[in-house]
Structures are given as structure tokens and as C-alpha cells.
Image (cartoon, rainbow, N blue to C red):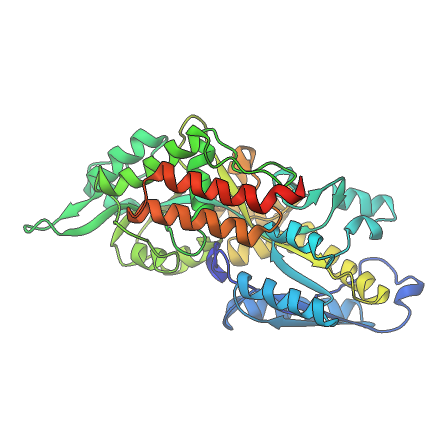
Length: 434
């Protein structure tokens, strides 16, 4: 999953908004409604089959609502398509877009808050049922703009066979930055000519390097943006410390590939035994379980001054331009698909974190976790998690930051200079929002 395994921590599931009904249809739902549903996935496969089956099951229970999933690429492609459709006047009724797109969608006046559809005690309990860490990228200004659906954190995966070969305890992951380097040094192998045949670790730096970097910056004690989305803190000394640690893995300790490490090929490198430890999304969990031909472990990210990971992944949003009956239908669908039982099954089928504590109390999830305890790691990391980096003009600000990180990793700019330039650009972009 895009940033997230099955659909790439950031593949865009583009499609019309899926609408489903929870309670008896009110007056607005008396007539049939169609909910177009943009879902971010680039290609067909298990994910699209799952979404199609959810739509079909919802329609059986709600015959007056038609849910029409539309698959249109990565998360980045999906937000562009959703905003283009909004400007043309024919947006999908609902979309799964990145939680970090919230400010952009608000600024474009493209979505409505879910508070408009909350009318019963059951609705209010449902809105309070999600993990608080996921709501940090879903609420602002006292309103709820997105509903968590396929959410994630960054976790550490390791090859237990390689640990054993290196004289390490195969059941014990590195607990802190120093141990991570120590383990990676023992796990890096070179041939007689000095060429690396096995890397100790990989942290991807393509696509959305800020997301993986946020694990390091959080562990260093820095928060990259404020909750209002109008200030960044890229020149915080802790941010520089985190970036230098990442660079040192390759340049100083020589346990990590030099240059840009691709997001999409990192899991494959892991499967092909080219790397012993990798940082990637928990959304890759099902992918790893299906394709790793060796015993593997999953752990929280190692701690710096503290533990930490950003949350990630996609939220449901409802289009402001959709007809009220369509909006109501979409709300029903979103309530339906996020019930504990369905959230649990979605987590089991994909590797994403089930979005509510109640999902982990379901018989299905309890049985799954008993058989596969790794499924609980990302959930257990949530108390240490922070909101994924998100601001107004998010794509522009994020691009400036990603470019800075990559320039520092490639060595084309000193880390401090790269971060200072990104901060200056963010200041210029965000000043009007303060």
C-alpha cells in the first residue's frame, strides 16, 4: 500500500464516495441515492475486490442506496482528481483521501463536517469511538472533517534468520537508536571486494520521505507542524539531529544504502533478503506475511529521546457539492463500514490498523491476534504516535520539505541549509493563514 503496504503507503484509492445506511432511512433517504466513491488504488487486486464486496453487502442491507467505487490511482492522483471534479461541479459523493488532505479540502470548500449528520446518541458514541491518535488528523476548529478508515503507523520489520546468523536474538528488535545502529552493523555483509551483499537496514526516502522521517524527528523530540496547520518547525535542533542520524546510517555507519531508497522496492528487497531490517507502514503487514519466505518480526520503532511514529493513511470525506440525500447516504455507508466488526475484518484483510478500540475486542480480531501477535504492534504504538505532518497548502509545503530531506540525503546541500530553506519556503506559503 502506498505509504501503507497493500495499496502503497500512498496509493490513491480514487473513486466515487461510498454511501451506506445505518439506521432506518429518514425523509431524505426515501428516494434512491447513488454514492460515487473515490478510492485510492492504482491497480486491481485484493483491495478492489474487498471494496467491491463491501459495496455489494451494503447495498443488500440498503437497497435504496447504490455505492459506486471508482479506482483512480495513488493518493496523490486521487486528491487531484477529486479536486478537479469538485471544481467542475461533479465530485464523488465520498472519497478516501489522505488524512493530511484535510486542510486542503477545507480551504477548497470541498467537504462538509460530519457534525452535520450527527443527530442521535448512537451517532455521538460512534464519533467518539475512534482511536484519539487518528482523530488528530481528522478534526480541527472544533469540527470533524474526516472519518478514519485505512490508517497506519510506521513499524520495524526484521528477518529473524538474519538476526540468528549475525549472533543476535531473533526475537528481540532494537529498542533505541544506538541499538539500531549496533544491530545494523552486525547485519550488514560485504563480499571480498567490499561490495555490500546484505544491508543492515533501509528507511525509504522516495515519494513521501517526510512520513518516514517523522518517525525520527518525533523520536528526537520535535513536532514538525502545529495543530492549526499554519506553522512549521523545520529548523528545530531536534529536526537536524534526526536528519543527521538518518544520513549517518549510510555515510558514517555504512549500514544503509546511499542515495534515495525507493518506497516501493523496499519490501521486495526485504523478501529477497537484501536487507535485514526495514521501516515501512503497518499497511504492508499482510503483504509481508504473504510474501516473506522466512520468519519475521514486527516491532515499534526504536526510541530516540522517546518512542514515536506518525500516523498515516486515509480518511473518508463527504463532498460539499453532493445533494443532501447523497450526503446522508454516504454518511450511512461510512458508519456501516466502520463498525467494529467491519473495521476488524478490514484490518485483518489488509494490515491497516483497525480504527477503534472496540474492533480489537471482536471475536475475529481476538482470534487473529492470538494466531498472529504482530497484528497488535501498530495499535500498541498509537499512544506514542503523533499526527501526520499536515498544513494548509499541504502539497506545496510538503514538497519543499521532501526536497530538503532528499537534498540532504543525496549530499547536494548541508542538512542545516536544506532545512532552513524549507522553513523559509513554508513561512512564505503559510503566512497568509495566520
